[in-house]
Length: 217
View 1: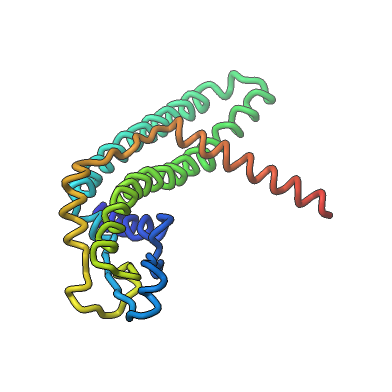
View 2 (view 1 turned 60 degrees about the vertical axis):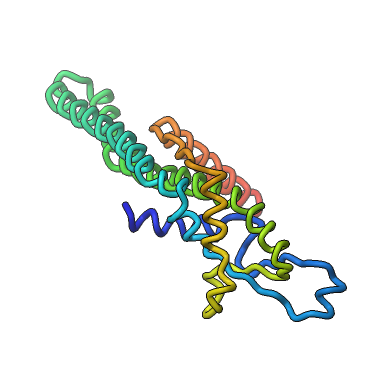
């Protein structure tokens, strides 16, 4: 889980608009023309991993994932029971009903259940990323204020820099202010309802794409 969280933290850092690596915060143009640029560095991955709010994410994420996995396990148990019931009563069914019931169960076993598990991971990942994004959004005014206070002209993310002098790194300063401003962040709960909704949206998008492709032929 920690490895997954770290990877997602990196993904969220790259996803937030406004402070992408290499973005510039310009001061007065007249001053910029006369003085060398003042460059500052911030490590946004650390803002997520080390902030008080960021540290509330992993435990919440574990609980959310355990909850939806429990739902999936219940669905798998129900499918197993339905298959056993079908095998027991198949001889009493008409050929048409037996064939249709068998096909439906096979689709649930080979397609529906695995697909739900796969989409669950995506929905779960999105929930974590949204929580991480909230932290970065809250940190933006803090970073902007520090840049202005130091008369800096450029703020770069640590991931975009090979080396920087320690005094240019404002990460700890941002963390201190962020911890006063934001103590925790909520990870949205995920359920099979959310998973099924995501599947429906994906299926609808695929059908639309196929229809448009057919029109072009």
